[in-house]
Image 1 (cartoon, rainbow, N blue to C red):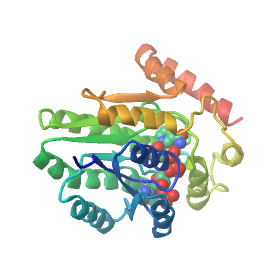
Image 2: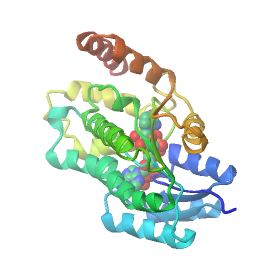
Image 3: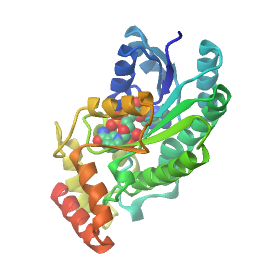
Length: 281
Ligand SMILES: NC(=O)c1ccc[n+]([C@@H]2O[C@H](COP(=O)([O-])OP(=O)(O)OC[C@H]3O[C@@H](n4cnc5c(N)ncnc54)[C@H](OP(=O)(O)O)[C@@H]3O)[C@@H](O)[C@H]2O)c1
């Protein structure tokens, strides 16, 4: 029997890389996609089928899907929508362009890719779509507005898609990681430097502290787990007979998923402000 196949986005580092390697070890045929052409060779050297897929670019998405289907003979068992980045900055300091860029990658590209894969899964009568969302798809935090908005939007599209695909044989799941060791923080820092004007912002003093936090080496956030923690949940979402709608990863996710059900909005805001003040001290 042919091995089960999966396309994963954002495999240059972090969760995507760990999940590509882990699933390949379990016998999956992994199409590990990366944004930049120079990241193909290191993955290929590990024996992974690596190809370019830049979520901002519709041609890149179509090209990657076409290549995968040519290689598999027109089938694809699973899609892990993992590629994304965090654009830090206060909501009032986000230009329309910067917010749009955040959505181009984290939502629109992911949506376009998913829509190209669904017909393949419908034809074959089965499929698994797993979305890498975030704890910040469940609750907001100051200075993460662009990212939070993109993940809330992903949650909304995914909850709807899951309902619409009922009975199609395609299962849709969300993974909600809290802090995970990866290049996420370094990449977010680069986006902050590139896109946020610190000098003219009413938030400049906090920004200086945020910069210091993001530049810190090692796991800055408490309860940080390695990316293997996400791999474990991904394997369940892909291989179990009854995948869950949501998979929580890390203690903070379990905590805030519970608190947002139990507390009033005002009380939850109080807790989130304390967390934010703590990390931006
Ligand atoms: N780390 C955490 O604490 C955490 C917590 C909750 C959720 N998550 C989610 O986990 C996922 C993976 O993040 P990570 O923690 O592994 O961070 P990471 O190490 O920064 O990996 C992010 C991956 O996404 C890729 N990417 C960025 N823009 C892209 C685009 N336009 N097209 C295709 N790929 C793109 C990056 O490629 P380049 O290297 O080329 O930029 C990289 O491969 C993301 O969805 C993130 O929101 C992470």
